[in-house]
Image (cartoon, rainbow, N blue to C red; front, side, top):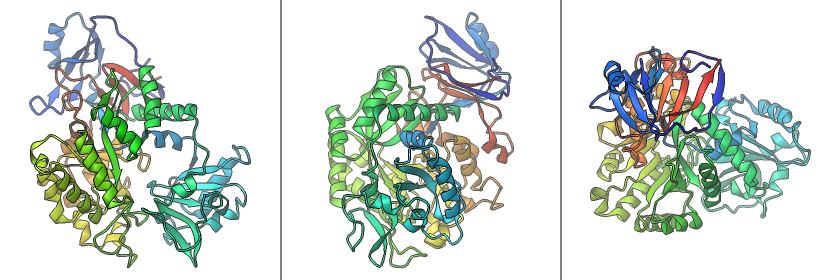
Length: 554
């Protein structure tokens, strides 16, 4: 078995109990603790409950814990357990059993991938896929149902766009909607793309459910298996925690069973979806619920204000620069949104709202300010805006004034940079993906990926945050380079910043006595390797509660 040398095969481990009273000591490590008082160390000790006892000098700790079980890190870098502050666990698991369209270069490429995938399925089964992005294709135009109909005239096809805020369906799938998609009507919070009154096959935001609701629902076993596949992928990437937005009450019950059975190897901070059932249940729990192991909790309501920039659903204060007359859309009715926020406040529930465009961000800030009132400045509410992607410059200081956390995803910037200026124009880019401006104004940042929209690998997020470049090193100085963050700021976003956003800074996010022994041992040092190599770093092992939940083996 190889724990700390570079190895090839992968093992995902279930949590195992240690002997009563046992102490474990990690030595010969280069520990970046993220504790400002003691930022670096060479050893750390933890007890059998997974609580850190000491972090410091190896020689001193070996004397102090002479009888401890010792693990030699062989000089490897150690960082606190990495936390993705915005990742969709069930969607990640489901992408592993759907047609993979990520990186497809054209409509023809999509069709070819679908035909290969369809050959594995029963002939009458829905063909469901994920990950297409028309911005990567020649011309950048939305595709149509006709493109799919030629290859799949009878089998229903439903394909989610990479951002999850648009879908592409064929005619057979659209016919299964409860209401004809043709005409002039539009669903609340969504848009059906049409030509001469006929639905083209592109559904944006609230319109996607018109077809998705016809897809046979997952069984409990399928849902459980998808979650377990996502857990394995997450811990293999070095994640010890994920903030999981928009979880239904039914899916939470499945997660509760997994946690109770010891089948949840990382910490999930669940955000209830915005329907009444989940909100009512969380209110009944007093605004907070936690599973005894500390691996599953819920105390947040996830709401949506607008769509995504890539599908032109983000709500903007002025027209899209490449689509005059279109300012995006609110996917939630403002009155209903305000009522949900007010109810969450009464129930002492943290609120997290998806807002991409500057109009959406302003509306969320206005609503938070009105609902919180004096509590905005005095209470430890830690309300969040998820993405905060395009923000008017005058609104950035309001985040700090209202004590609102900006939960942002660095790889969104590097994914969007080839076409963002076409959507927004140069002036609006000043408040786009503006991490350094938020830091300057004292806004707490929590970093994530929004997987599976982006890759689950947090090293790609660290690299994007520090360089604002793609993996080929373009553009040479980084895109909008004044908004780069340094390595410590980037790592903080995925550790102590994410922990703070989940009220967990006294449990995880830093390595210091009294906190949980959640950490990652890496095959290189993210604070010192050449910057391009940050993206290529890999976990040697991932530890939760002082137990290895993932490691590489020979």
